Length: 293
Length: 262
Image 1: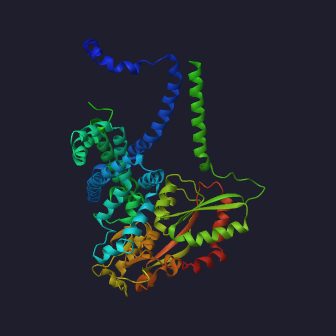
Image 2: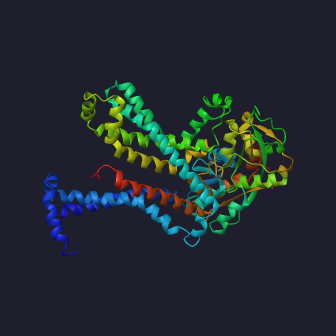
Image 3: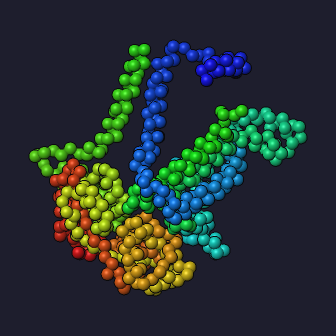
């Protein structure tokens, strides 16, 4: 390895040189001081994010894990969580991409409607999920504003798997919308204008130019959306309740287990963690912007 | 190089301050020794079903002892017990049954033996409009009737299982909630047709729910223990508040809220 590495590096250097040149220019001794501070703070930030997860790994009941993992309740909650999170992600894509397009175009709007639209999309991010769940219940519950009409038609939403999907879609949607909107704003509008000037219809432009341009943003948003939906707790338990196999997702099962069997709760939390990390690791490198090409 | 070291030192010092700031509350109030035994904060972790009566008693205690602040945190007994076992800073602990209290005493975290001072029974509540036309507890088994119960992992859930077994009923609920207040909320919002809650919660809800008597309810009794925690940093005031709850004033307030006597 040490023998073969230098020649290959020298060989590839000329090819990469023109692209890398602008980045390596500002490196100087003066920048080293702040860099250390940044590293230290970054390490603290990372420690805050990662150490709690290590604590879970360290306190996990490893000896009992195989039994806990294949317990019917675990598999049932995992299956329900993955199913609902996948459906929620698809719903977020179907509903969220058009919303992101409108949001990106809203820069041309007057200030008030533009800010109102942005605030509306942000609400689920700042609202405590339990409050979001209560709001959904007041809208779609059988005495809710819309729910009353649905009840007349024989449709009740709370306490169903559909309610879990709605709660997850509610909390996860902003992640998709903002990711796609960012990608849309970063995309070069002139390409779309060129396509339009060459006779493409708006739908054609959207399908053949806009979508491919923002695909990495869509993928990134979908991954975040899925992870958020998978971890959803507050809105789900308030709006959908908690019944095994119907509405009791993995986070709810983990919380309930923590009431009297902490080791089982940790086992369930680990399952959630493994699924989330697997999805994030599996999709990120391949689809995210910045790793293109 | 020296500038960067200074920078690192600053960051480390800042981090130290941040951490110290974070850990300050755990240290709790400093007990002033002999001057006045009644100062500082008493942190009470109490079962959700005690919310109203403890809130009322804390306000009255604070009036009697202006230098004492009672901070109360209400929740599912089991979750609170788990928090204490994990080192949550608290002075006084009151659960809704003896089984959850046992997890704390077994861990050696109680200062003395818990005292049982109140009892509670379950009752059936329905929304005021009684949409499913529930008249007796056996109506809960009818298909299409939406019932909310507590999950078996919390005291009101184990009590509900006990009561339904005593009534020889098999009920399929639409949801198993994390604490008794969540069940009550679902009934108040008219999202379920019925729920089993504590008599005291039905009392507190007033006319927002309608009560339906359950014959065997009196036989399935939750006993409420209270104990000062060994990790308490303000045992004097914690004991004083505990005594206040056990006093005639406390007993009257508990009776008023619908609790029974052991």
